[in-house]
Length: 213
Image (cartoon, rainbow, N blue to C red; front, top):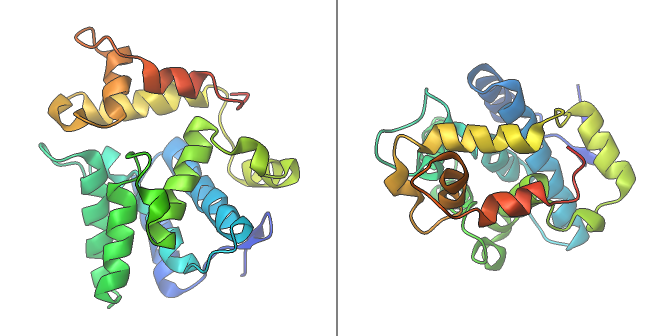
């Protein structure tokens, strides 16, 4: 059955359905709903910017972007972004996806916490980060019609304490390997959650965004 939310058609291929089920079975409700919202914000951004993008590749990138935070896919020593990117690459190889497309999805996940770079790259890479930045930081919040925001969140709700809880998820996925936060925004997460850190910039942006929860 075709699913359309905020005017965006959810990919319905066998690969997309398998990705949905895998992520649904692996992530908790917060991460699953967040990942789905990232897809819609990314697709809406692509439409607004009149970009030509592969909706299915964007979907896989969005759905897998936080898989590295889960016990099933977390490594002891790699950045969680790389763990998620590797999981997506392994998944896509199983469906015979072209190597360049796999590389784009891998890069979209690996760089989604590296501001200022993905926006200059190919659409899949740029739009995964755009979706993440909208959902977590509220960047470009006013560029989305309130009807679209409401429709997406009606299907994939932001829970009452989403801002605090998403930070807790980030901390849980990085606190055992703090060296992997060097040079990226997750250092600010540990600054809030670990007494050995003092920086709070990233979390201040999250907590000060226009999102009501």
